[in-house]
Amino acid sequence: MRAACLRGVSRAKSPRTTRPAPETMRPADLVKRQFTAEAPNVLWVADITYIKTHSGWVYAAFVIDVFSRMVVGWQVATSLYTDLALDALEMGIWKRRRTGGDLAGLVHHSDRGVQYRDLRYTERLGLADAVASVGSKGDSYDNALAEAFNSLFKAELIRNKGPWTSINDVEIAVAEYIDWFNQRRLHGELGHVPPAEYEAHHATTSTSPEALKTS
Image (cartoon, rainbow, N blue to C red; front, top):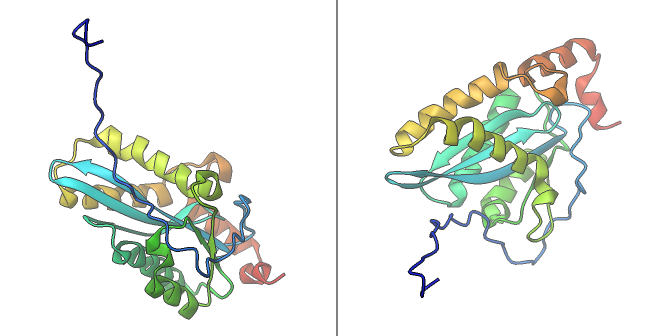
């Protein structure tokens, strides 16, 4: 290539969103790649992705209810500190409890990122009576549903609507996208209805939605 005066194309490096925490007292993988749930608030998955803007990298954290694919919590920030993931979790807890959801026994599944292994994060799960579950090292399949959402998010919003100027326009766009995703986007896995409609149907047809969590 040098002799022919050719040079390879350089790609910008993507930020590393998963920084593994020390292995001491790591929670078990309670999901084993079985991303199914019989009711809301049985299994949540969480992950972080990134968006390139003219002002630098922006990071987005999401918490998703596996039963309906509902995004129950989200947050964007310009850093990968624990507060990013914790704010998304707090939103999920607040939204579900506001509508009378019972989070006792909820399994919260994530990768081994330090944000999810942070003491404040695990303590917040404990206060909500939720149980932490963590996938194996370096295996995206162990958190496949969250990874699949990130791919949709990138394809339907980030690459489709960019370029992005800063965190401000990203935050507005993410808020609008999540509202559309939860309330109007049709999901093949749900019988071609939106997550909100799927949960509403479940609530009206199940005599005891939360009973399934302990059955």
